Image 1 (cartoon, rainbow, N blue to C red):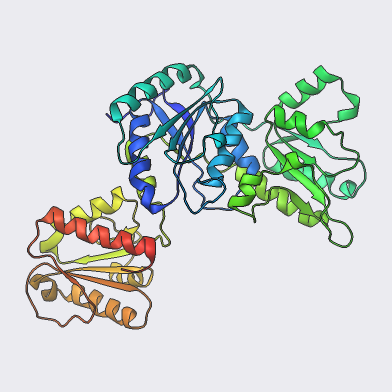
Image 2 (image 1 turned 90 degrees about the horizontal axis):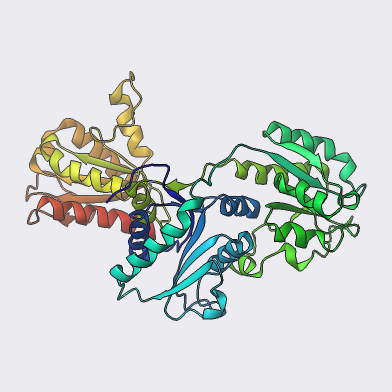
Length: 445
């Protein structure tokens, strides 16, 4: 059953493995949860990590689902430290959570709680019937929160000390936030009682806060963290460029273990540097949620994980072999492979001379896939595409994958290919798509 986009879909922050060998596991759980009304939101990892963006994404999710796979190369966690970090976000946000943990991962990293359940799985013996019952129950209790999701931009709390260099950039910071659609307002911690401060912070979509200032009350970070308000934490470098000490609550050790370069605190020395760095985080807040509502969208994403190259692929064939090309093109779509084909995915602009644009499409491609048959060599354009691609291959500028659909030998082929004449069309397509995907993952055919 493929659920379409409806008001009943449950916006879910999904934590998963990004490795190629875990694709099938991701697809298994995606289909299981999708068929029970969940729409997964993921961090695609196509950009540098922005912690306030992830916090906001968690805050706007009705629930958290994690598939935590065992990582024997991780001596401390025995799993992805990033999965542990995302679990921590769910705990802070107090969202309802289901954590599916592979056998062999230490239990202490993912403890159960009043709104959290953990379930151990063995990837070689997945019990779909038992899992379905649990997911159905999880959907039942989570459905009342399904109206959470994307919202209009709101207020940003500015929690900065007087002086300490901020007077030179406060106006520019406010203007930048205003230009991004937010209403920036100073939050004076010292002038508010407990309830007034709670209400003031409650109205903030996120805050920009100096976490290293000696004038910051010791309880301020705990309050922001405890209320799970996304935060862009700032700390000014000393005149000599030394990093100030920041409170432990400002950083996450699991995230640091996963990505030591992740900017968990915005260190700055000049006003332009401060504005530039904060602006990057603000821009990430506006990125559209990478949320899959349809089964196809999710499968395309999960089957593309682990690739070192995005292609594109140039698919070349004679018209007589369009049936095979159609199957290959369909499988490319299902596996989220970017490609060009004169009939099934022609990206040449409308109204231009297509003959002048075909060979440049070969230049743009990482892989040239040639479906070779006797009729291929009878086509002037097929031969031109082939000879041009072969030249590019000889220059080391693309990968050449020839597939022989019959035993014709009208043209010598220097690149190593594969004979597919003995296979049915579906099997031929599977071999081709498998070879292409292998190249995109490893960089070698």
